[in-house]
Image (cartoon, rainbow, N blue to C red; front, side, top):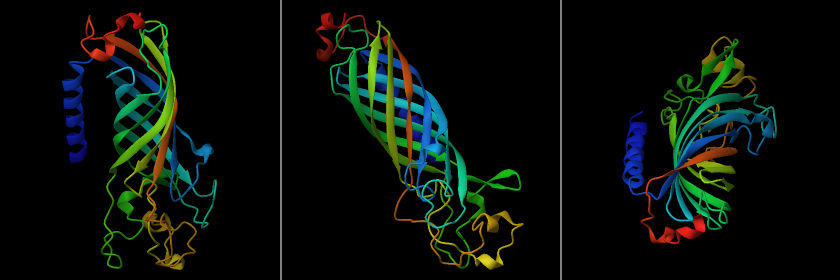
Length: 276
């Protein structure tokens, strides 16, 4: 939580310092779906798409460059009985997702909300995100938090070097979208992109099994959720720690333009006639 608080404070300071001199801002909402890719589903499994959405604040630097900040809420889900089943592990999870992201957009065409001519552009984006997750799995009709169960032997005598993972991590978002201006104030669009994360534990799966499958007590969630099929040995591969987890978000958005200056103060907007 300390990392999240620091990131949020920096985010607010940067937003306030820059928006005080902005030509115009756009704020709005986005709605769509999120998709996990990792040890349980190494290739996109579209049946696992979960609902997601959030809010957007765009600071338009020029007609080509935009600084965008988003707050997303959603869910991620994985199940190795769907898609490519690599090891027959019968592992699954679901997790709530909260993401704070700061990104730079590059418009391929000159774009200005309110312009009659320059009111459409495809764009690319990249940036930096902070996100929170909390993988859970089903046990006796309840969804149990997996991190406290230490399902890969974290902090055990057999694996003293394995430590419990953090449920807060960073990611690098990148993707593309299209935007279209409607009238003088509205912008609508589509956007899709992946997040390359710095964790391999969104799904609670990364390294090896730590129990002998035939000795697992099915009444103990910390044991049965580590190896639901009870057919693996300690040290057998459970995940691939060399590959970090990914997730994607795609959706539609609508934003509303707020003018912060009566007269454009920036050279990039000096030819205001073309925006009217």
